Image: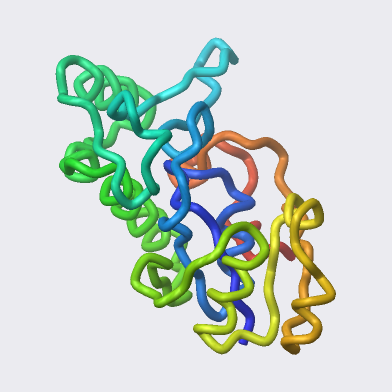
Length: 206
């Protein structure tokens, strides 16, 4: 079984879904520490003036000390209104339902389900936090793969820096280092709402 694993990023880029599409199972890596100043709570598009424009979910101040599955969003204040206004101006769509939640992981999972439906991706997904696994880095990935009975792991290119390939082979799990084919790295919403010239057939990575 081909398995890929990734943190639940916020409306991620096209390559995220290309990798998901190749797998028989997608494991949401929500049992690792949240990464500050990364893609867990934000993404970007290019606006009408060709400037990079970020949309960000504000999270609690101590988020980096928690596992992704436990990170809370900040009290609403102005961040949600600002974010929803920016997205509606860009995409002419009301995303309020997606951002109705107290935990970042719940918001991101609703966002991923929204994207999967629009892209017609039906690859099963499970949360790593529901599995009986522990460990860090290469050991955690290996333990997840063993738990779901995988024999092939589709890794991102960054995996070359930390995966213990010899141990994977001993456990009869092969590794493929996936390389995305994308014209840019902005949010997948650009494709879903037709702001990119590339067609959705690109999701198949063909």
